[in-house]
Each structure stands twice: as structure tokens, then as C-alpha cells.
Length: 488
Ligand code: 5AD
Ligand code: SF4
Image 1 (cartoon, rainbow, N blue to C red):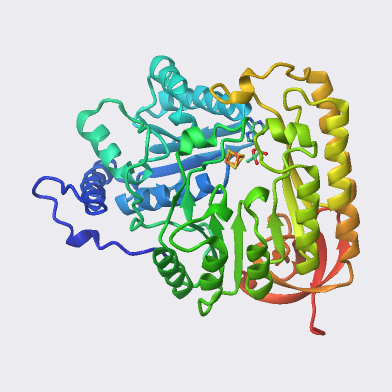
Image 2: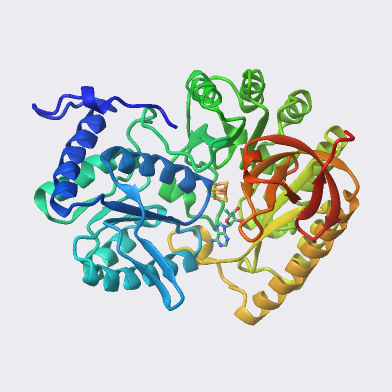
């Protein structure tokens, strides 16, 4: 299922090695020995539960941490959803946090209140917090002071050390807090447990150098670091050998990838990997999306018909204040160039409403771009003031009722445009990758088109992971009902 580490062969009698990843294998085995004794003592397997908030980066980090927990011997479980509410009795609970918007932080504190109560009923529970929110000093102080039942706290740069931190906590029976200001090395050889057998995310770079004025990511994920192309390709070849046919190349701004070669060149190399069928990537910053990339996308048959191109705002003056380095006209011109060379490509976006100083005219510009581009979907966000970012100090924060009203208008516009686009494809035949059995109807499966749209078709779960031609019968606004097609 993942890169196998032969823990049995790891020597744990002496001191821990200094070199990574050997040091982590040592601690994984140490924890596993503890786990063996503990499971014997309790006469059962110990369970883990992970909760992941935020973006694809966090999801990928959680896959790596889940694999470490399973190597140690934890089994998934410990969540019970009953009619009268949910309860948790997992032996290890891991929250991978997000801090991109304020409400994500509030959500975590809400969860922690609930977990405190659960831990009182299940005193052996270990609680760990990691991720972007833990890179903020004030939040760590708050956890230290007000949440003493949290056992382990770490950030975004040392997730690969989970076993070492856990072992330290087991050994000392004290709280372990280890948050780094900066990354050290990129430690890649650790395993990752994939959610799907047929598709996987692959980090190509970490961090962000853009400092959009509203965004906290550069402060909590550090400066850009690109992986070497050979390491990326080796990982992808390994995934393909393991049954993966679709990869998502991940980075905060993949267009500024620089691993000795640029992103278009990397894309061409990934496209040449035998056995791979689909390539996606995320996220593209419009300022760095070059014609060279558009050409590479056009040439590479495996690159999907989908591009996520965050707009953030349609107003040139707001974009300037956001430090985005493009304006309304250049964004629209870029979309034109993309559409000309890649007809049929689906565009999706991120939009923030209520950035400081946003006037009705600025907001109208955003609506105008939404109308002119026609997105398949848009993630729409209400501006959230993040302490430490330049925009938090900007004057003219927009009053809440105004923001809410604009937000609703934006959603309505996005839905209207998406509906037209979705309707336009009905009757067409597309290749679909069947991803999962339908939760509600076992006679149906859900599949994803190259353009990222979801289609529900009749079929059983044996089809999961396979590609089929599908005719789109009906649009439901943001997904389709279809049927397998023998005609294409
Ligand atoms: N407020 C609202 N939305 C934000 N995003 C990033 N920072 C903020 C913020 N302070 C949004 C952007 C980004 C997405 C991942 O989150 O739209 O593209
Ligand atoms: Fe944040 Fe801008 Fe970097 Fe995206 S490109 S992570 S919005 S700073």
C-alpha cells in the first residue's frame, strides 16, 4: 500500500541515529514495542483518529502521519456516531489544523472543548495538535495555558517526527511541544497511507514566497522549497507500480516550481511516465502562469482538462492591495489565451469578498469577471482578518452586513454561470474515473471526468479505480447523472 519500511530490521538497542529518516524508523520501532506491550496489557488493539482541516497540503501531510501511526500499530477507529450524537474513545486523536481563516481556528477550539469531555471518559486518550495553526505563537500559548489535556503539539515543519514526539511523550508522560520556526531538510522517504488506491497527491514544492497581503500561509509554511525532479518522478513511478493512475502535483504555487527545471518541463517529464493516465496540479498563481505552461498542457495528453486559477478579486485596485501582481485585464487576457489553446478546459477559482476597502464598484468588477470567465465552480470566502498579515492593518474594513450581502450575490452569480456550463455538456461522452460507491445508493458509483466534474452512474463497487466512457444524461447544477456508454 505504501513504501514498505522493514521495521523488523531496525536496531533499537543503542541510541537513536542522528541521520534522517533512519532516526524516525528507530522511534517508530520504539513506539511499536511500546504498542505491543500496551495492546497485550489491554487485550485489544489501540485506535487512532485523525481530523484534517484545510487544503490539499494538509490532507497530504495527514496521509504521511497516518502511515506512521499504522506502522506503530495503531488501527483506525474510535469514532462512534449515534443518534444521540457522536462520541470519541480513540487512543490517539490527531488534529491537523488550518489557520487560513479565523473560523478554522474557532472550529479547533470547539473540537478541543468536546475532546476534553471525551478524554475524561477515556483517560488513556492521547491528543495531538499539529499543522498551520500551531505555527502561530499566540495559538500555542493559548493551548499551553488553557488546554492542558493536549499531549503533543507540533507544527508544519516536523510532521515527519511524529513517532519521535510520541515516543518522548510516552517516555516522559509529559506534554511535548515542538514547533519549529523554519524547516530543516525535506525528509521524503517516510511512507504515506493513501486514501485512494488509484489516485494520489504528490508534493512538488513546499511553502510560498508570494505574501499576498491577506494570507498567513507564507508565515506558517515558510519559504518555497522545490523537490528535485528525479525524486518526484521516482515517487510517481513507485505510485504507478502500486496501482495509481492519477496524480495531483501539489504546491502553493506550482508555477514557480524550480527544481533545476521549471514547472512546464517537469510536467512533460511526468507526462512521459508509463502507466500514468491523468495528471492534475494545484495551485496556479495567475502571475506565474506562462505561455510555456499552456503549451506544455496542450502537448501533454495526460494533463487533465481542468485548471484552478484563483482570482481573489476582479478589481484591479483591490488586486494591487492584495499584492497579487496582476490586474483584471491581464487575468482576463490570460483566460483568453488558455481557452484558445485549450478549448474545453474547465476553470475553477477562489474569490475573497470584503477585502478591506472593497467598494461596490470593486465588487461589481468581481461579478463581471465571474460572468466573463464562466467558472465550473468557485470557492468563495469572506475576508478573514489574520493577525500578522499586512491587510489586518488596512483601514476601511468592510462592515459585516455589506460583506454578507455581496457574498450571497456572488454565490448566486457563480451558480448561475456554473449551471449554464454544466448544461452545455449534457449529451456528451467523456472518459470518467470511477472513484467510489455511492453512499446513499449501492447500485450507483461516483466518477470524475477529466474536467473534474462528478458524474453518478449505475454500477457496482467493482468498478472503483477503472476508467469508463460515460454519457452525461442530466445536469444537477454542479454534478451529473450519466450512463456508461458503449458508443464512444
Ligand atoms: N480571508 C479569506 N480567505 C482567504 N484565503 C486566504 N487567506 C484568506 C483570508 N485571510 C483564501 C484564498 C486562497 C484560499 C486557499 O483561501 O482565496 O486562495
Ligand atoms: Fe497565500 Fe498568496 Fe501564497 Fe496562495 S499565493 S498561499 S494566497 S500568499
